[in-house]
Image (cartoon, rainbow, N blue to C red; front, side, top):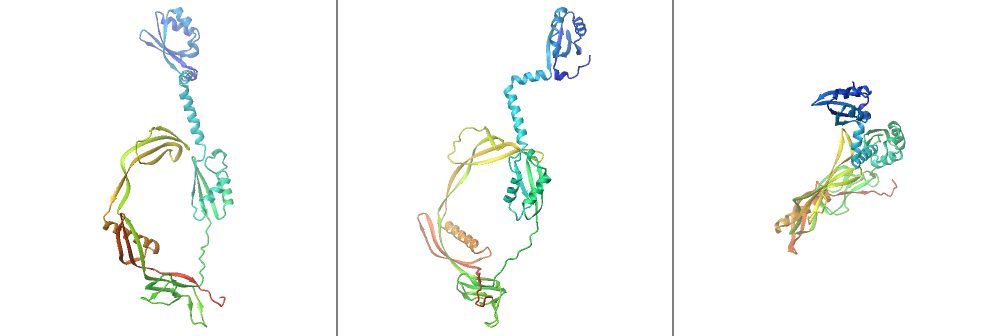
Length: 396
């Protein structure tokens, strides 16, 4: 006979029947209207399959023919359900895990902003929040992307086009800003004056009248390039522009310790592994405290990725690395060199990277309390010009 329809759903068994009247048993089964299939010899008996519902009607026929049966296989949904019920806690956990994964994949987890230069990302995210676009929002609660893009464009002035693209649990907001006319700074009439005492080494007047020459000694506040052209009767006021460099002297008091402390890794570490589910992390391995006196912890997050979709599920590893403190002792010469280098970096940071240190002279040096103390005079060529607005009495 052929296998009946939906046999896997209804459940069926494989029997091994033995006895003196096996053929009579087979005839009796078919005569009773019981559907059997896949009947084949097996050792001293036969092997056959029948539906689970018909299994319990075989006892009278076996007794009548003197045969015996042995169940050699159980197949179908009823037996699978029974096996799962025996491990119900595992089954329930697997079911809850699947439901949690389905729910978490139905939420927005990240929002990216692309294309904005002048409009702050925070303003775009605030407008998107008003339209219901924010982390941990259900995806099915969002409107169509075209409608959301139109609403966001209306909320944000200075934007000509907005596009929304959803990839899994991530939303990308692409922004095209309106072109802004270039605004030139308004410059008032002014002089260029010296911001410190110096000796002029270079002067270039792009606009205005140079007042000093090269190798001139100037004091703080002296006019370098004047914004007044002509005489008193025919004065014309302009915006003085140019570049003036001069030699300036800076005195530094430097203190450098002879001993320095630092830290380094010993190579020993303790790892802890976590299962990450959304914003929750469940520790799986690495329980117990470490025996390190001092340590530093590094965290690595490895989310699961399906194609280009980053799932809200993954692994997190904490690496606790043992740290050992080290102490280095420097010679006075090395400490002096380190102090000089630090002072030079400070000069460049304060007065411009194009400043040039022409010379340096140690005025005083002493060693005391584990430190080297120095008073150093630096001769530096740097930009010395600063602006001074012109205030005239004519009201111009």
